[in-house]
Amino acid sequence: MKRMLRPLLLTVGLTALLTGAGNVMAQNDGGGRGGNFDPAQFQQQMMDRFKERLEMTNDNEWVAVQGLIQKVMDTRRATFSGMGFGGRRNNGSGGDNAGRNGGRGGLNAAPSPEAEDLQKALDAKASPDELKAKLEKLRDARKAKEAALTKAQEALRKVLTVRQEATAVSMGLLP
Image (cartoon, rainbow, N blue to C red; front, side, top):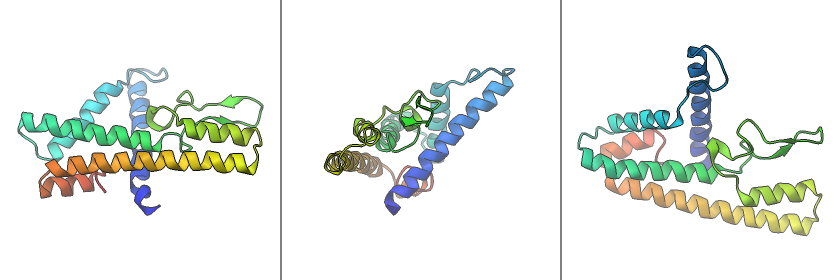
C-alpha cells in the first residue's frame, strides 16, 4: 500500500496541475471552458523540465531517456485508471455521472474494464461469489499493471547516472 501511495499522490498532483493549468489558460483567454489549453504543449513543457533537471545536454541521449520517461508516465496512468478517479458512478438521481472527463480513468486513461465490471456487478447487487470473482480479476489486472510500471521504471533507472536517478526519484518518476 505504501508503495502505491507516492505514485498515487504524484498522479493526483499531476491531475490538479493539469486542471489548474487549463483553468489559468482559460482565464487568460477571456473565459470559456478549457480555453486554449494544449495537452501536447503541456506535455512538452514537462519533458523540457525533466531534461533540464536531469541535466541532459546530449540530444541523442535525451531521445532515448525521453522515451523511457514517457513509458513510465503512460504506464503509471494506466496503472491508476479505473481506481475511482473519474470512473463511472451512479449519482443517486437515476442518471450516470461519468465525471468531467467523460467517464474515462484518471488523466484521460481508458477506464479499467475490470473496474467497470465490478461497478456493474455492485450496481446489479450481484451475489457475493460473483463479486469475489470480479474483485479477483480486478486485483490481478492491477498487479499486472503494477508489474509493468516497475519494469518501465527499472528500464529508466538502468540508463541514468546515480545523480540522474536521485533527481528522478525526487521528481517522482522512480520509487
